[in-house]
Image 1 (cartoon, rainbow, N blue to C red):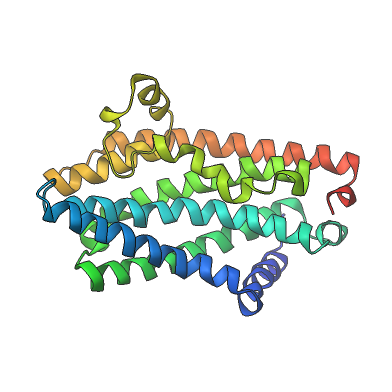
Image 2 (image 1 turned 90 degrees about the horizontal axis):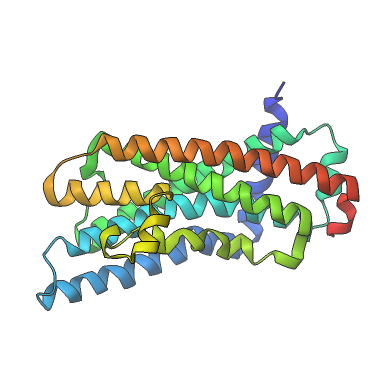
Length: 262
């Protein structure tokens, strides 16, 4: 049974990093702000050339803000795991009464809270800079964000499985791993412009259905529940598989000795 006190202790521990680590604060606010500045201005420039409709900037900003959901969820799982390895604290954690399931829940909660903070900050920034209100999607925003959150968690646990076994040798995956699905997620463009082989891959990438759906809402006002439900089905399958893989890799790594990772 999960002990909520231990989960709460780990959540507090990871938030304490924010007080002493400017890298974590820049990841939460600086880089999202830079993306919004650069891509927002790019959208305005394209629209000014007449190369796109006035809705071009909204399509781009939707992609920027919604990608933060995936990135934040994945990043928190992987970087907090790497923090334990860098701090030589991984063995200490699992020598305590903390269980693996409690640790997983704490990582999910930390990622969820920081994702909400980053997205809220980005939403306010896009509104004041470009007059774009992400909340114009209304209640349709919730299933889209939830689906993207599941994508981030699934990617996070898949990468964490490799990190748990191989350690710092492949730590770059903590920052770059989820980018592998970026080209197939159709953030700023339709899946139809991808080459045939890439379209085939995109059909198995859950965010592609979410971003395609949100563009439909922007251009036509129509929300496709079929796309959202398909993205949920894929995400749930991937999340179950990735958590199983992470737990399996954890036990394989523990057999060899967690101390070797530090």
